[in-house]
Amino acid sequence: MEQPTLSHTHQYLLGFDIKPSVQRTAVMNYLLSHMTHPTVDDIYTALSPTMPTLSKTTVYNTLNLFLEKGAVRMLTIDERNARYDADISHHAHLRCRMCDRVYDLRDVQPALFSLPRVEGFDIEAAEISYVGICPECKTGKKG
Amino acid sequence: MEQPTLSHTHQYLLGFDIKPSVQRTAVMNYLLSHMTHPTVDDIYTALSPTMPTLSKTTVYNTLNLFLEKGAVRMLTIDERNARYDADISHHAHLRCRMCDRVYDLRDVQPALFSLPRVEGFDIEAAEISYVGICPECKTGKKG
DNA sequence: TGTCAATTTTGTAACGAGTACAAAGGTAAT
DNA sequence: ATTACCTTTGTACTCGTTACAAAATTGACA
Image (cartoon, rainbow over all chains, first blue to last red; front, side, top):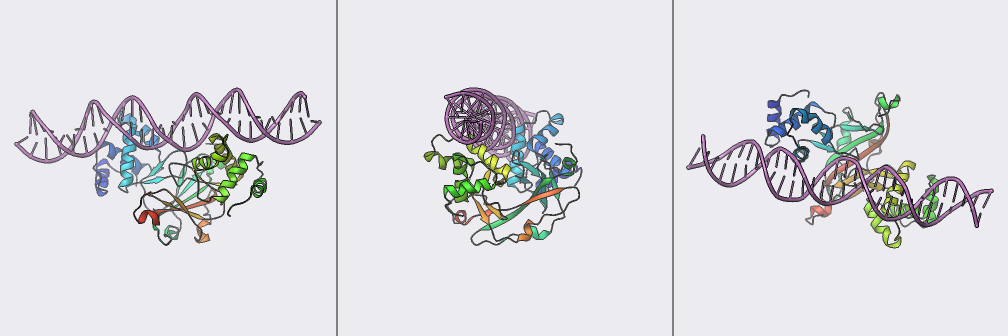
């Protein structure tokens, strides 16, 4: 999904039972048009110029609401910052251990996401991720 | 592995090219006999009584050294704290989203750990984890 | 349109995991 | 015993995140 209109995003939020305030719509719109697993700071820094009164707390509040409603996934693959992904479909992630960028891996076998049965547990979701070195860091320029 | 002797742990560290100081041996011994994915605080709290001069910084230093040498795995499955696992063999993890406990899942298909080939990337390791509710939280007593 | 209640946003202060750093302590070789 | 090197320790600090209460906004209804 690239460059959704604000009214599209508005409808999208309603679909998750989220009341679409201006701030919430802006955050979700950013997530939908930047599927780069941004951190809270990425989002705040990007929206701040066109929304000068935006508070970082609001970004946190908003993302936590989105999480509760199942509208975004939180990635814990980066131990420093939480990252957010508006793509809640099945896909794996690949983190470069040099620059910490997180890439999508869409063409993994769907079987990877099948949930194992374990006596007594209710298993709800699978998280598949890989660690390695990305092309840019491989060719020398760090970071 | 349960209750390794300190001299066994001493040898074990040498196998990873780690100089076995008293503190390092104690931390690794704890990890080997408590495969419960402890946090830094878990380890510090457990060792502190019998090692009163132990500093929490030493626990951090030690675990970072173990990581560099490949003697432990760091789990980022819990967004609050880093967790450490002395079992570096292939196995998946299962986190209860109510109590945050992390369980091992040993009988997963080995195929899950096969590394995908992606043009330009050097993929080095797979991390497989599942989120759900554990038996204890299911039966009512939270957390 | 004005009023009131409920929700949302905002800024500040606080919390807590993890790190930097330098002093102190321990180890090993000569 | 002296010296050099490595390890441990405690304090101070950084920074991501949350708590909290005041301010702003929204929506309902008269």
